[in-house]
Image 1: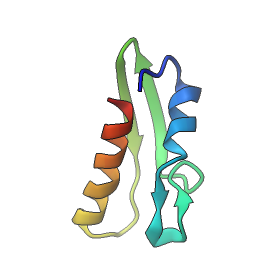
Image 2: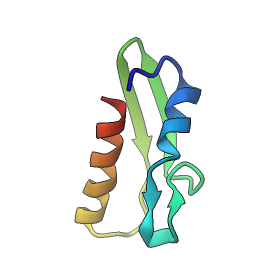
Image 3: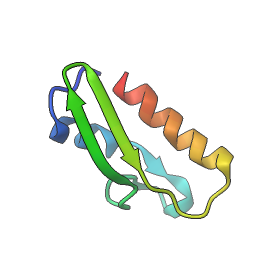
Amino acid sequence: MSPSNKSQVLEALKTIKDERRGGEDIVSLGMVSDVHVDGAEVKVVMEFDDRPTSERHLLEDAVADLVE
């Protein structure tokens, strides 16, 4: 993915679902607190509830794969 702006990144992030929270997307759940796009560099800031580290890593990996 080569996002050119924040809204494109947010739309793409809506495809990542949190099965622990009923399959709702991470943007609607408020897990994405900020997105920065600077050319080809994308930074996504996320907030997690109390969940095991392994579950956090799964979501972080999904986000990283999407914005690469």
